[in-house]
Amino acid sequence: MSDVTVSASFDDDFGARVDEIVDRAVTEQRIVGAMILVARRGEVLYSRAAGLADRDTKTPVAADAIFRLASVTKPIVATAAIALADGGTICLDDPVTRFIPEFRPKLADGSEPVITIKHLLTHTAGLSYGFRQPADGPYHQAGVSDGLDQPGLSMAENLSRIVSVPLSYRPGSGWSYSVAMDVLGEAMARATGASLPELVDRLVVEPLGMQDTAFTVRDRSRLVTPYADGPGKAVAMGEHHRVPFGDAAISFTPGRVFVPASFASGGTGMNGTAGDVLKLLEALRSGGRSIIRPETAVAMTTDTIAGIETSLPGWGWGLGFGVLRDPRAAATPQNAGTWRWGGVYGHSWFVDPALDLTVVALTNTAIAGMTGAFPDALRNAIYGRQA
Image (cartoon, rainbow, N blue to C red; front, side, top):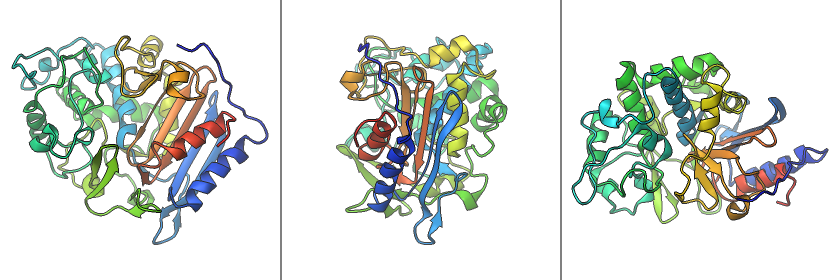
């Protein structure tokens, strides 16, 4: 691990550097709209609503715009799971079958390994995501939903489809980004007798005052229109939209959120504002703020899969998101110990605890807002690097 520490450059040009990156992305129409917050030690140093929430109506992004959070859901649900563990309702070493007896996926050799709650939190359960597989891959053949499509699909049916596919490896022996958080959400619901939305509200959203964050959209007038990468510029998403991603594609159905029968996806199902996301990340950065214990906040934000490689060079994994092991290997100016992730609807966020720095960048443009030129340039501008 690198021992090099790089400081962010909050000089007179800090805001101007970030503005330049944002303005360029919006002008070039790679990003349609965005809401960006940069905070240090809890103080917001930069706040910018840029571009359009809806291109056809020319509605600008507002500071309280609501976004489909996609995988920004994961740290929220993970925090709720940790709160249940703190209270003794679940244990990280519990087998998932304690709560979901029928969840018994097998290895290719037919054996049935034990999958624990911790395996789900760390994506070491041997599960996968359909968008990480080719079009004829096993999750596609089984009809497994990644939580972004198939409106009206029940959790029971999706679990049945997941179980029908052999595990990719023995739990605990590898890492693969996956539907694990959806399974975790169902385990949490069965452990308590409450729905996942009810649990997240009670354990995280309400205590932190995240009043605009939910599995439903609390004010549709503030929900941004979703866009996707297109040839030359971002294009409006259709009713069902596939966006190329690596060697595969991600399937989106933006209207899923408006179909009450859709299962509550613990990995991708929530909606919220940049300000609400900042509240959560700041709570974790500052030790839990009464929603979880300080020692478990530390455990949550520490690399817990030593010896296991993720698909991202230089990055490990905590209890819900990536943790930076080696800045050089990751080619990032962030400090070792930084934790971060994003969301495929177009979001990125990170916390650099060495600098008490928290950054939230929500956009309405998949995939450009999550990975690639825009989030990398935004990060570099914050750290004083050349775009």
